[in-house]
Amino acid sequence: MNSTSRRRFLTLAVAGTVEPGKRAQAATAGRELFTFRAVAGLPAKPFPSYASYVIQGHVDIVRSTGIVTKTVFAGAPEAMSTIVLPGLFQSSGGQE
Image 1 (cartoon, one colour):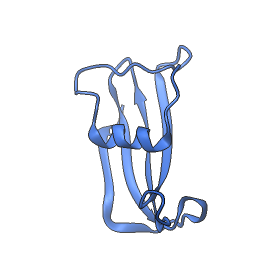
Image 2 (cartoon, one colour):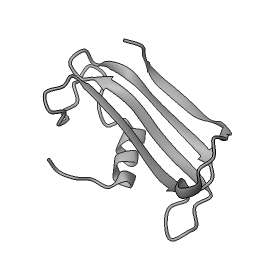
Image 3 (cartoon, helix red, strand yellow):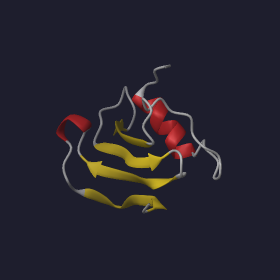
Image 4 (spheres, one colour):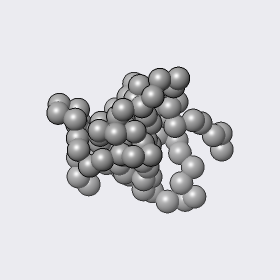
């Protein structure tokens, strides 16, 4: 399996690289459910981070269903708070 950086994963997730109706290929060790969480600091290096961009969710690869949430929290990843910055929460998908 190829490795990728968290920032590259976030870039791909935000861009929506998987078209609806097409199944994503993922190494899930035979499981149907793919669960993930990626965190990156905002703004990008070399600037100091003042916020954390979090993409998390679960996707059923066989059924092509799941939920993905994108949230921006106050604070850098190493000191992230539970405060969501106004207007910066997005949820997509549906409950299986």
